[in-house]
Length: 264
Image 1 (cartoon, rainbow, N blue to C red):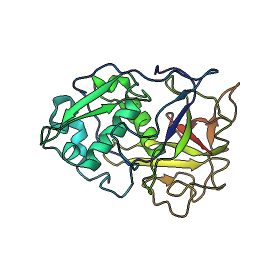
Image 2: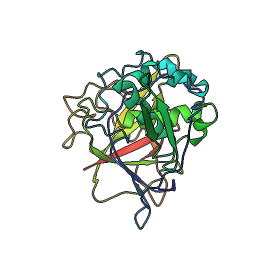
Image 3: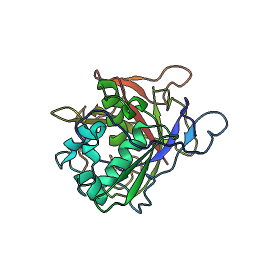
Image 4: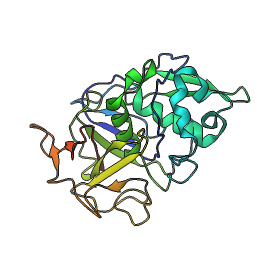
């Protein structure tokens, strides 16, 4: 599966880490994947490659201040050492899976070992920050990974397919008729000392919302609507350019790394 411009169908549920340093992803190996459908776009699996039955839940050991500063030490291996919280718990490993899923392209895989000697593979899919594999994650990297993780957040922990668009070469703009409802856009920086986690509502924010996601009364997400309760992205954000006018947004209130989600 090559990272190429076009929209990406993915699924949701995540909550975020807060530090950002080299993702010294050990034992990177090649992976094969599916080809993009005709006309552009890239469909990826709706869950991380861990055999998990549930998605990431906001309140299931995935709190921002729950040992997630360990992510900063990945380059030196201590952040994902066998004894670390991220590798020693199922929730921690699931978080790593989503970090790798967002940051690395589909031909990269990280292999790590827990304290019992069990090996786990974490497979890239979207490729928003491939530089994080061997170098530090700068502000641009941090903001793209943040937008991706927030877009996956689902307080029910259930995998829900969504359609992702963004002004990033690994995603791009373009829509699918199978995903007609514009849910909202996500942006911020969870890696900052004071994590910033934002969204704004899309045009169909309140139309048949998905349980556990924005717009649903059951949602209890970590992020806030930057434009107030039920605030919409339009006209506050800068929209995508022709020929993709209306697909999504390029910037919102100074945040220039924005991901817009469409749902069924």
